[in-house]
Amino acid sequence: MGQGKIGIVGLGIMGRPMARNLLKAGYSLTVYDVVGTAVEELATDGASAASSSKEVAESAPVVITMVPDSADSEAAILGPGGVLEGASKGSTVIDMSSIAPGVSQKIAAACEESGVEFLDAPVSGGEPKAIDGTLAIMVGGKKDVFEANRGLLDVLGGSVVLCGGYGAGNTTKLANQIVVAANVEAVGEALVLARKAGLDPQVVYEAIRGGLAGSTVMDAKAPMMIAGDFKPGFRIRLHQKDLHNALLTGKELGVPLPVTSLVQQMLGSLINDGKGDSDHSAIANFIEDMANVTISGA
Ligand code: NAD
Image (cartoon, rainbow, N blue to C red):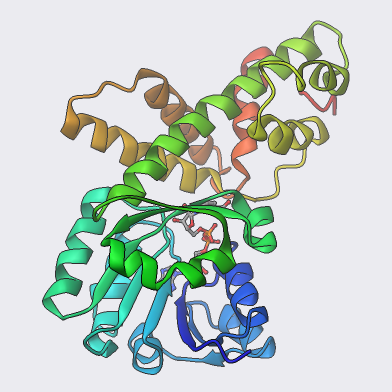
């Protein structure tokens, strides 16, 4: 025990279990979230409560941020009352949020100007792997900073890979989100087809999961679609945000992303339908509505 001090900003679906794993591993934590109840919950688990990101940075040499999007990372790190106002020279900021790679580079440059080290280290695996401490962590930044923080990242992740310089972690995460989006959508289409053909979607899932169509996405999301249970998990609005960032990055690089674009539009439509806070497996609802059938049969 007695592993050193860590600060965490952002205690949502992901930040909360990640914080608990660090506490379990013996780190002493100072935490902050704009939502006060989230901070109180972690304080009950043994973390010290702070009243701003600045205060978190004043109390810990390494600060992890886990907030929704680019603007939130900018606010938490660069904004008034943000991490950089409290961070001392030589400390480290690890932004584990999934944000636009260009914004990671902007934040990295601001950190360097203040003599603060930076890593972008977004994750994949969702709440279950955040709870188990087996996330896939994709990192951008300097090799020596990566190595210095490897022990900490190993507490949170089952695989931890340095992908390149600043922003490379988030570019890798966009690649990840393209694959996940197309997969979730395809599982939805397949199970709607099965149901409308009069088959039992559970039987179809069991028949195909061991073949080439089987995937981590299928095993995580098909049961939710079959049960008609869309409790998040990973919110539709966050996946729409990731695909938006992928499309912007594709535009900058001259890479058309036609399937990503289609799924991003579907997710946008579901947000307009009031489903932004449903799990992204609810993309099946879009196909169900078009086919006038539900996978669950309800
Ligand atoms: P969430 O909405 O559940 O939690 C985000 C938290 O950040 C909230 O508690 C919010 O109050 C807090 N917050 C926002 N702005 C803040 C600020 N300026 N200062 C302090 N706190 C602030 O989201 P989540 O599901 O935990 O996702 C966090 C990040 O991880 C996102 O970028 C998401 O895309 C990514 N991610 C999520 C999953 C998943 O399955 N949920 C999986 C992989 C990656």
